[in-house]
Each structure stands twice: as structure tokens, then as C-alpha cells.
Image (cartoon, rainbow, N blue to C red):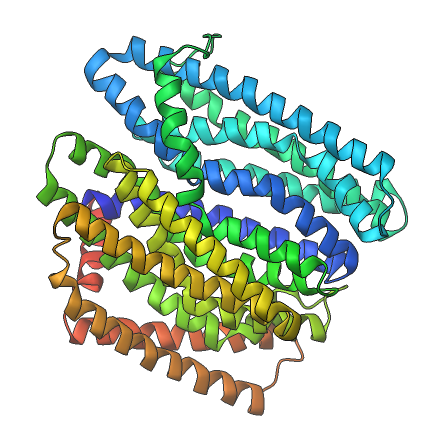
Length: 518
């Protein structure tokens, strides 16, 4: 049984718990603020500091830091490894603090001297409160990278659960104490974001101390390790997170295109992130130190084999997830969100956005893995150049579509740009490695695509039957409308995988048998 599947599976479990809690947070958010203009203002404001979480926590900072951290451990010993980590942390604290200070001052000046509409004022006031989250999430990301490099994946992935627990508590306990109106209560959620950042970083400290880490200030300004990490991180911040930057660009456009577009699209993105984060990001996080070690030792056949195996498993999981998100978009939205301020119109609009995003799920996840492959090879510029092109493409498509198709236009733009991004990364990586040796994936891909289409048809027919004959006027009926088609489609998908011998089900069975024996 491959170590890749074991480690990424353990991390996927922790990540899945976090994503489920994140989904619970969105359920609470939906009932609290629905798709109102206040929800639009909060979601756009939160997207700015949250972008740093995606860029750093799941991307550029750890992608640049882990290879250097591992190299220090192997070549210079643990003392130099921890010294280098302290230098990077010191530099992070200094630069992030300056960034937060400048941002808060700039926002305050805009609010003081500029007259704008109520939506924009509320958005900027919320952003000013939440911006310190940037520093906290950067620290949490660095702690996570250090623990990953030391072989710990479960606890760092569980750190995000603390964030979601605190944010849920901010809706249920803090927001009602901020005032009587929604545009007053929403400030409780902004304060909760900052408190959640503290909890997420602090959660990882005990395990770091157990590993031997002790923080002490190390001047970062002339440090060689800091210079190397920064050099690799700056282009990586663009290269590995095209999807998240796309969201910020397109939703900024959508904020002024019409009410409810931003919040409808955010709920769709949150639902799609469940399978993407549950396995895709977990697998990419595991692959970075693995591929970095193989690249450092110039074991390129093993490098290609690890990459191929990771892509194979990503396709197996996310092809089915993509089809189910598309076919069951409306019943999923109804089950999870339709209560309180989130009404039938909100359900229909968010489901439409999800249908337009779902076909791009595989592309979004593959981009994360291919970017890690480039970083492991020490190349951060190629993903950056490709990402810049795709960002521009996404913005053009979004501007062309959002005014007419609303949230559907945003979904289409993101799916198309992610697909182009994936295609260009494959082409560039094949040129870099001479060959990717992916011929062995051709048969599994064809089988899995066919199996996913058949499974999707099964889910669609069952959902249509349930909707027409049974209905969804009660909560347990809504659950059946979602989970009965999912269960049936999954069984069909796995059965077809067994019949055509793709090997995925048997490998999973071996893993579970091994766990039972232990």
C-alpha cells in the first residue's frame, strides 16, 4: 500500500472534518444573512484576508519554505533547521505587520475622506476589522508547513477546525450582542474572524514545541534562508493560487454588477471546496515534500511515478464528485442552506453557480498538484507566467458574462480559465521533464470518465423520481433526495471501476484490511 495514499488519506480525514465544519459555518451564515446586500459586503471583505490563507496556507509560502526547511534538516542538522525557521518567522512577522498597518491606515483614510454608497462603506469597515487576520493566518501556514516537513499531517490539517468553530460561535453568540439590525450584527462575524486566526495558529504550537521548536527573534534582513524563500514565494503566490485570485477579481466585478451575485457564488464555491479540499489539496500538500525529496536526489523516474499515482487518485475521487455536484446542485443547496434569510430564489441562484463551477473541479485540483511539481523542481516562474495569462483570461470572460449571466457567468469564467491553466501546466511540465510517462493513465481516465457519466445519469434519474413522487417538504425528505442518489451513484461508479480493473477499489480495500489487522 502506497505511503501516499496512507498519508494523504489521514490528512484528508482531518481536512474533511475541517471542510464539514466549514460547510456548517456556511449553513449558519446562510440562515443569518442569506444573499442580502450585507452578505455581499461581508463576503467580499472576507475574501481579501482569506485570499492570503489560500495563497499561503495552501500554496506559496509552504511551497517555497518546505524544500528549504527539508534541505537544512538533511544537510545542516536540526539546530540550523530551527534557526532558519525562526529567521523566516521573524521576517514574516515584520513584513505582515507592516502590510496590516498600511492596509488599515489606507482603509481608514478612504472611509474618512471619500463619500461612497452604503454597501461599499460597510465592506471597507468590515475589511478594516478583519485585515489583521492576514498576519495570523501567515503564521498558521508557516507552522503547518514546518509540521508537514516533520512528518505530521493530521494535526496541522485539524487546525482549521478551530477557525470554523470560533466563526460559528461568532454568529450564534457574538453577533446578537452587536445590535438589532443585520448591518450592525455583521461586525460580530468580522471580530470572530480575527479571534479564529489566533486559535488556528495557537492550536499547532504544542506539537511544534514537542518537536523541539522554540521561537527566538533572528534578524531576517540579511538572512540567506529568508532571501531564498522570498525569491521562490513571490512568483509562487501567483502561480499556485490562480483560482483564488480569480475569485477575488470576478467577485469584485460582480459586487457592482448586481445584488446577491457575490453571496450566491460564494455558497456555490464553499460547497465545491468540500471535495476539492477533502482530497485534492490534501494530496497536493503531501506531494510537495515527497516530490521535493525525489527532485533533490535526482530520482526523476520515481518523481514521475509519484506524480502519476497522485493524478490517478485525484481523478478517481474528483470525477465522481464533479458529476454529483452538477446533477444534485439544487437539492444540495436546498438541504444545506434553505432556511432563515436563505430562500428558494437564493437556492436556485446558488445552484446555478454550482452547476457552472462543478465541471472545473478536476482542473482546479490538478492545477494545485502540477504547481507543486514545478516548485519541487525549483521552478516558480513557469506557473507564475501561465497563471498571469489565465488570470487575464478569466477577468475578460467574467466581464463579458457577469452582466448578462450573473453568478453563472462567474462560474463559467472560472471553469474555463482553470481548464486552460491545467492544460498549459501539463504542456510546460512535459517539456521540462522531457516526458511525464502518463501513458498508463490513459485507460483509467477513459474508464473513469465513462463510469462517472453513467453514475451521474443514475443520480439524476433517482433525484428526478424522488422530486416528482416523494417531494422535499421535510428535512428528512431533503436528506433522502441528496444521499440516496449519491449512494446509488457511488456504488455504480465503484462497481464499474472493479469490472474494468482500474485498481482503485482494490487498493482501498487493502488499506482498510491493513488497518483492521493492526
